[in-house]
Image (cartoon, rainbow, N blue to C red; front, side, top):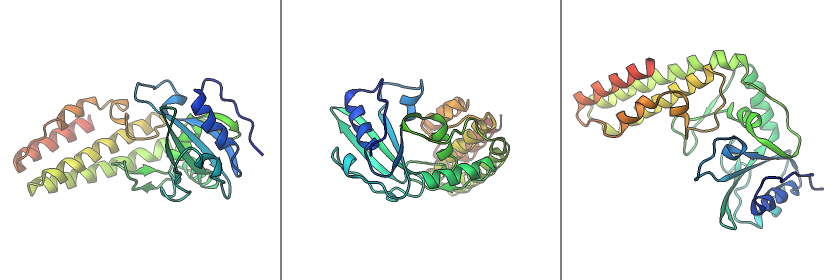
Length: 250
């Protein structure tokens, strides 16, 4: 039985995909996610749709639009989904196991989270992102738990963890710099910036879904020019990392 769905404001092609998700056996809710669910939209923004399910999910309806990656194929958090092009529009479909979402949401309320090494993420994906998705999406069909603001335990507990990771990354950047390894030095330095960005955003209780706009959102724009042309010699790299560290601690 299909979930009743409200597709108002969606392009017709996106609405068709959303309706197919609502018709999938096992689906509990369909959500408009990402930048399209907020005001943070630009010319490059695609359409993100998330289907929350329990148990098994029938992928037959969505498979009519293209290849679908089954649950678990993208890891325990991102789970699975599809990158579709429908009538010229990019539509990303994300699968979310509601039992997994509920588990990590409960952990986040206690200030507890884990990090997954996921493709496309430098600093890793914190498990509390699943709670952030609940808080930021527009429910088109079905029902989801209301989560509201970032839990106080996470606001208090996450920043020190992120800053421990930041300092660790900076030390590894210095170690690579001492060996003249510019790739390792700049890589760990970039990771440190994102870890500090996570810390600052958690302090504000500000949910983030990915790393795309985190640096500027956290007020770390001053670090951007440092990465345009990082130095190459060991001595200059060490000085460059110290300058970056000062910027992050400011």
